[in-house]
Length: 87
Image (cartoon, rainbow, N blue to C red):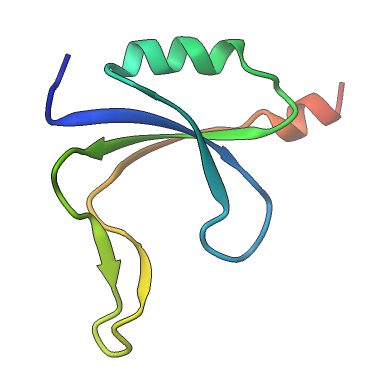
């Protein structure tokens, strides 16, 4: 277990605005999180993010100073939705 990070599972939605996902679980290791993802319903997509603890990872646009995303985050996408719909 890496005490400097946690692994978050997020449901991904097909909308154009940010944020387009919401959290459903946090795990101490990638292995536990991936195992959980494999057991979740396959009618939606999921994102797995490795999130640092005790560190702000917000990304602000330099000119507008508006929040536009996350910086330095490891990310994996699990695309199930279209595969499920074509069954």
